[in-house]
Amino acid sequence: MSELNLKGFIVTLNLPSDSAMRIKCDTSMLKGVKYLSFINELKAFMNSVDFDYAERQESLRGRELEAHYQSKRIRSETGFKIVDSKTLWVRPFPSRFENILKTIRVEAYRLLNGMTICITRERKGMYKDNIYLLPGGEKTVNELYSGIKRLNEKLNDLSMMMAKYEKGEELEKLMRILRKNGVKITSSYSKKLEISVDLLPIDIDVALEEWASKNPEVANTLQKAKKEMVEAAVQKFKAEIEPLLRMIEGEARLRNAKETLEKLKALANTLGMSALARTVLLPLEKAVEDPENTSKYIPSPESFRKDIDVRLKGVLENL
Image 1 (cartoon, helix red, strand yellow):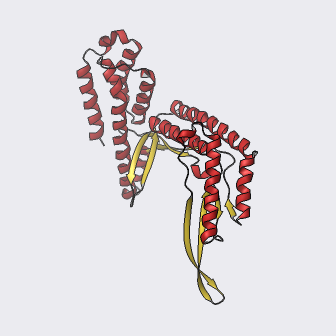
Image 2 (cartoon, helix red, strand yellow; image 1 turned 45 degrees about the horizontal axis):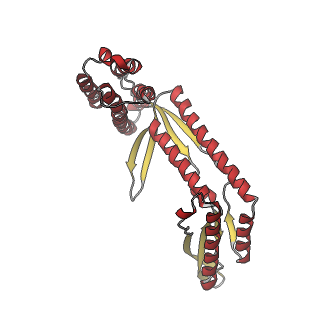
Image 3 (tube, rainbow, N blue to C red; image 1 turned 90 degrees about the horizontal axis):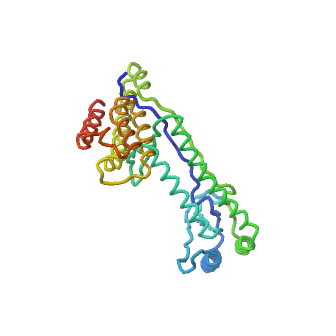
């Protein structure tokens, strides 16, 4: 087995979306003017709630309702008939609540992107698949879970805000509007908002050795996956090490230098490159610990940078 041995965890974050704070309603029974009247009444309700709960009322822009229309061909006693259905997603909570959820989602993806190697695969149409590889072992896994725990504490606070809102008169007013118009609720909002993590450990080189003799096509697929992941890891390594190099060259200061070093160590371990950690990260670590004497550990930053480029190029050439 070569030194380049890709290890880590495939990470999947299960995040609550804003749909978790909505009520799904069947409004098929409302036609024409009655439907428009119902929509206007709903919008008036939502705007009123947003005004009462807004931190900055001058920034309010109003909210739109999301509706889906579908025609179905169903069998009847006399043959087939076309039935139209209208589904409406109602936002029962103030937009401020939804904005809190959106902010937490942004923080979750920032945490994920900061700790993982992201491989993006184009799919047909307008969609993309992202695969997230968490480098390192126990330390990085614990760090990820600690970050998710902090975000879940924020979500728990939001869930408590929602529970308190449920006891107020606003939600009951919304239910009266729905009942008055004969609207059926087909699914309700989530009572508990939470982020969960799925981890899948991988060791691609072990799998490659196993499948090389069993099925060359599977081995080729794994080799392609390894190539994509290593290329993404190398790009991540370059991006993470650049602020440290600029600090060594005296062009910038870096507050979180030690945290950046830990990420780089995890990346080197994921790539199975002990030589990279030994020849590049060790002197960097000493320079970070003793910033007044960086020249003692890295006499020529320019040569050091070139050496890093050569070693990373060698990683890619060995794929």
